[in-house]
Length: 389
Image 1 (cartoon, one colour):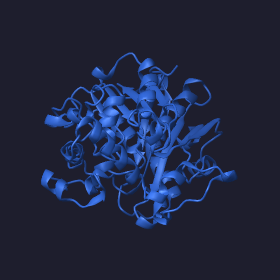
Image 2 (cartoon, rainbow, N blue to C red; image 1 turned 180 degrees about the horizontal axis):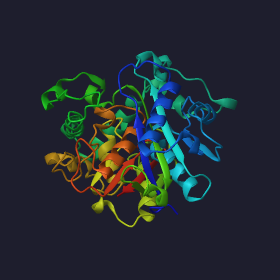
Image 3 (spheres, helix red, strand yellow; image 1 turned 90 degrees about the vertical axis):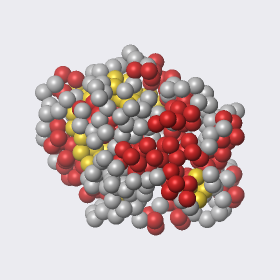
Image 4 (cartoon, rainbow, N blue to C red; image 1 turned 45 degrees about the horizontal axis):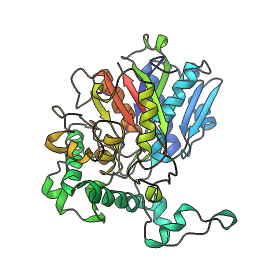
């Protein structure tokens, strides 16, 4: 249904920092208005709004404050970082179906301050769920798996055991995206190099994951504008056509802790990828660059396998010999620095970097990039987009 019928024509973002002034709503408004200005579209033309379900600014508030007209398509997508590509895809579906003409998707986040993170208030125990039925969290929080990093560390250890991944492979991911961020003036880690020695000397956060295996905690907001392919030709910038959308999670999935499934390392990326490639005219070998959700370094080898860039158990080896690096890597990855080194805004900055690659304006521009994969979070019900020029 989607296949190149819609395009992203406007992108906007605030600065990224550990602590920004203003509320999440104010940041969201700044990003949305910047994206509309980038597209050359007036706020009164916006009639579609799609957001993350964890967004604190609802569609009514945003529409009223930007001066939108009648809004005839709106929705939200759950599961945190898994929603980044889906909110754009749902905006595109509204445009493709004729339910709206100008759709906006956005994410605004203020989590730079440690006290704002939900797991800071969590104790080692967890209450029983409604009606006395245990929630999934009741089975792991009493043993200290309080934070997302603790949950992913378990999967990383399993991957090491099964396939021989080492911490050097994780370092390959961290060093590649940091090098990309060092060329991006908007990145939190701009001009802050990282060496392999510094990576290995860093303090543990949740063994086997150290400080540099974790994404940043940052404030910021981003937005995109989606219109029809016909209208996109008259907008200010080269359109990034939305070629395909995928969403998915596997049977018996448990959010972040897929430990009890038949194969914990076959995560949501596998289900999402099957849907994505089924609707596409090209495959992984034709992708020029990828923006893969990187809240934690182990998610990269898992996602490389799930989306078909290498075989099962080969994701760690794929990172060797500069495989993820710009400009000569097999798959230049997270070319703005990603969640690890640009900013962590639940993966939405990856969407904007995908658009920049198609436009030819990235600070780590892949020569002739006409295709780009963008993904949401592995470990949760997820989503992915294929963009093309």
